[in-house]
Length: 93
Length: 93
Image 1: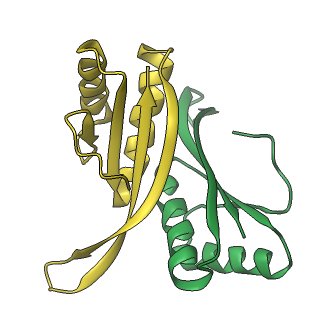
Image 2 (image 1 turned 180 degrees about the horizontal axis):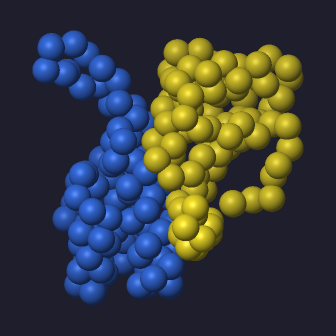
């Protein structure tokens, strides 16, 4: 994962994909050239859905500039360290 | 998605991630320089897990050469066309 934590980063969690698609649309309409989708664990597939819905249904001029995968170490509720996969999708308009 | 359908392509479905990690290990041990993980829908996050487990626990010299995302149109059991997201992770040793 890169260190990008700017206001063009959208963390994809458990909401419906359209919630994040709308967040992307808002960012691009604000004039951002790049929007970064980040997700981990089971939300990774949702992040891909968000990118694809945005590109196919809304902004066909948006391109996937880069997709990075990685691993983060988290501590769960039992205090154990667990690895969780991550994705970062860089969208460019 | 590329048109690669060779015997170095592993389709990631609903089995445990280790099943696919072992499939990757077998391919690389057979001398393959590249192994491609493909998944769609909710299995996308599992494909990322497979790549990360392989690289972190087994073959630390394996690199992620490319990650591509896309959309496929499927026909569901009700005969309706539905879009499903896809991922293709190209691993290189």
